[in-house]
Figure 1 (tube, one colour):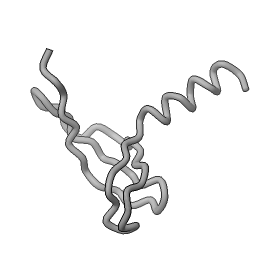
Figure 2: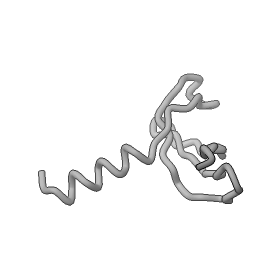
Figure 3: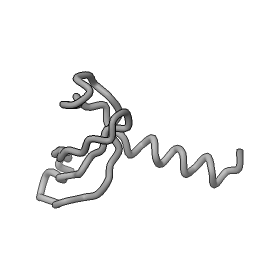
Length: 65
């Protein structure tokens, strides 16, 4: 595998969260689809279940520096 392919796959994996899915009824990997809004200490993301494709919003809290 080439370095750029490995880097791409690593970035994709880092852009996932293990979240409960309302459709699958279990915790599945959800991929970051887009950033909806940025707040002072949080980011609202659109997430997609990698198992069934259902999309949902998710608030990712950021630690103050």
